[in-house]
Length: 338
Image (cartoon, rainbow, N blue to C red; front, side, top):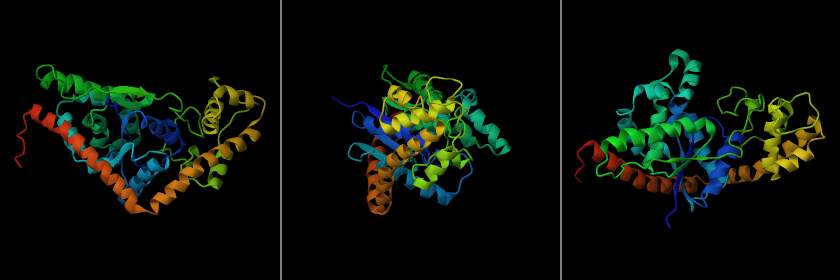
């Protein structure tokens, strides 16, 4: 029986952090055992805002190495760089031409980011959900792991596939593009900022103390947890909407310690923040140590890392071109003659 296919990816902007790992990558590691898995470093998405070219190159390699260090296995999944697959850009242009502008203008993340960028907002920022749709649809993904904040982008991909491509260009009822379904990751789907338990941990937050980067040193982790925002209450608890920091930090501790939420809730119900923070710090340091060790090993062997990315790109190219050629044919493009 053929495995269902899953596609995921992360932008190489800034350093991957605890939220990226616990909210996404750690779940991909489990998924690769059950699904045909493709994981992408989405570097084309990284240039929708002003960027440093040298930093982009370094962060792209960092992200790929961290995928592997976190447990993605090239024998079980395909790891590749988005910009190495020309089909992403070509399909994006085709989808641009049949996607209504008003669909793009209603995207929540565009509205939020456009406000921050003001007059510097780029066309790419408006259009990147179509590129994301191309990423997903190129690989005939059955499922796409998404958090609640990404569901709107997946719905756009589904609408483009069904309403703008299949319903208009398919012949004899045979769909051109597979309409993917969301795979909602619940546990750890949203790790919050260390500075504000109501906001998601983010690479774009200008305050470095808001997040634990996967490559942070033990000393840096201690300093950040020591500064992490708390409240005036004694004892930690879940499910109290008035205590978002307790919910977030206790949840992180539960995931990293491997203990059930009920267990840590009971364990920490009668201790103060002064005793809890060192416990959380130790759990983070011990959890990240093997990731950092493997990452450093991988970066010392660039040929091995490049070979994995090359192999992944080869598989991705074959699969993406099959989909792209179906779309090209349906749209009436003249095929190339070899």
